[in-house]
Length: 213
Image 1 (tube, rainbow, N blue to C red):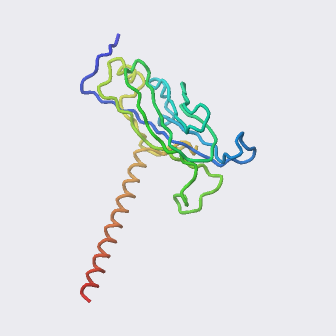
Image 2: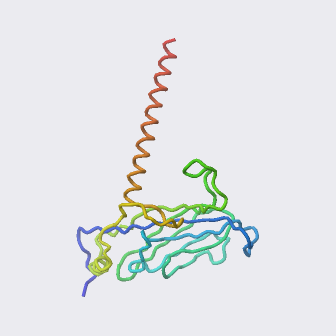
Image 3: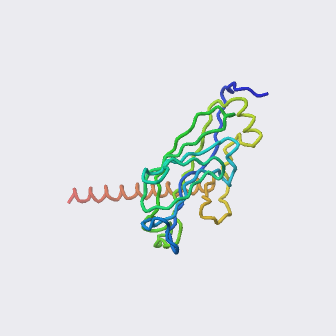
């Protein structure tokens, strides 16, 4: 039987994403007529991985104006759906299964209901298009217990397992976190940095020319 002895030198990380998806309310009005959006806040595993083998529950702390603002979700999917009109910070507390012997982890997420002015293609945001605010993160377990390591091994979870390709799913709540997306994002940042550097050089040359006049 595995013990609670820590495995020296072992570090294991598990990928998750958390955040919210929001859509404007159309048709039948909610109980509170002032509410303009329906939103879902969540903690999920990549590729819809079942996280319950190491996560026991997730507690979401909503704005104090909501009835029972401390909401505990004790089985997957670890998500909560509500309606509202305003954006606010949500505290997300992840509690792990007892066999892990790990302390809870607290995350914070700013609920986003409204899109930026345009979408990624520079087009006006369609009124019925969901607004996503999802973040990738990794839960890092430093020197897990032998018992927890057995659970991780059993669930093929000793490696982060970030997908190499973008997922084929068109579900708007399924983010495209992958090594491919990471590479593309790094390339976009690199190109943007090159453009900024080029603009700085042009401005310096212009200033030098003006000084020489």
